[in-house]
Length: 537
View: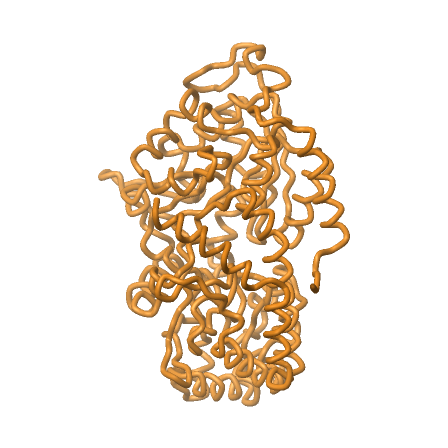
C-alpha cells in the first residue's frame, strides 16, 4: 500500500500514542487551581483582580495584523485582566505545528482557530484537551444560553463520547452557505469589447484574449488571465469544477448521492475538469506560480499598484485586492456551464465552523479561560472583536442597527478590520437575529447580493453535501487519519501533475487502481457510518 505520510508526522503520531498510553480516562485536574488566584470573580468583569497571563495558539490569516498590537485584544485584556501570549501560526504551518505540540506535550493553555476535528476527538479522548461541558455550565452564561437556544450548534459541537472539547464560531447569515465568488476583471472585458462568459468554452476564449491583447494597456505581456493558489480554499480554482458536474472538488472531496457517500476524485466528471484546466495551464492562461506561491505573493499580484495583473480569481469577498479602488475593477460572475450544462457551485456552509476554542491539559486556569471565552460573547464587545471598534470601524443607529464603516480607499475591508480585531478566529456566537442586525461592508454587501442573484440557485444541494460539522469516533479518526491522508495526498499529487504536464487519459485507469489499493472502500465505509449516524441524531 502506498504511503504519503512524512517522517515528522509519523514520529509525532508515535509520540502521541506513547503519551496516550500514560493517560487515564479521567478529566485532567488543573495543576494549580484557579481558586488560588487572588480574587477570581465567578461573574462580572474583570475576571481576576490581579492580571495573569495565558498562552494561546491561533491561526493567523494574511489580512491579520499582529495580535499583540490589535486594539480589541488590548481592550479585552483591560476588561478581563487576562493577558494572552500569542503563538500566531500561518495556515501553511498549522498541521505540522499542531503535531509537534501534541507530540512533545508542550501545549499552550488555549487553542483558538487551528485544530481540526480529528485532532479534537483524538486529543480530547486522550485527556490532552479538557471537556468543556461543566465549565460552560458554571462559568459561561452567554455560551450556555446560546447553545440551549441553538440545539443544532450544541449537537454539532458534541463529540461521539458526549463531551464538548471545542467551541465553534457561529455567524448565522444566509450568504455563508457558499465560500467563494469568481471575480472577473470588468474593465478588461469592456476594453476588449467582450461579454462575461456563460460557458467553460466562452471562459477559455475570454482568458485567451486577456493573455494576448494587453488589456491593462502597459504594452507588456504581464497579464495573468486566471490567478489562484492551489492549496488555499479561498483562492483555488476548484469551485469551477462544478461546471463539469463535480459536487465536492476540495475539502473532504466527499459527496452524497441518493444517501450514499461517494469520492469525487474517482468520478469521470473530475477527470473532465482536470483535462480542461490542463488546457488552460498549457496555454499559459493560469498563473505559473499557482502551485507554489504563498498568500502574500498572491495578494501582492492582485493589489499591484501600477496596473491590474489578474484577469480573474476566486475569493471570499475580494479582500485580497487590498483596496476598494482595485476591487471595483472586478465583478463576480454567474457560474459557467460545462459541456453537459452543469453549473454547480460548491457549497460550504460557513455559518458554523468547529474547533475555535479548546483548553489544554497544561492549562492551570481552565475556569478563567472559560470565562474569557464567555466575555468575548458579551454584548457589543462581541461585534467589536468580530469587526473592529465602534467609532472607527462600526457605528450604531438609534434603532440599534450596526453598520460597518468603509475602509480607506487604499485598504481592503479585511485588512482594515484585521489590523485591530481577531475577526472570525475566536469562538464568537452570533444568532441569526444578531447577524442580520449588521449592515455589511461594501464588499460583504456585494457578496450578499451575489448570493441572492448569482449563486443561490446553483449551490450544490444540501442533500448532496457531506456534512462538515461532524465529529468521528476515536476509532474512526484513527483509521481515517491514515486513509484520508494517504488517498487525498495521492489525489492532490496526481491532480497537480496532470494540470501541469498532462497525461490523465493514459494514467487514469492505473490511478483508479492505486486509490482502490490504498483503501478507498474502507474510507467510504467509515464515512458512510459517520454520515448515517449524523443524519439519525
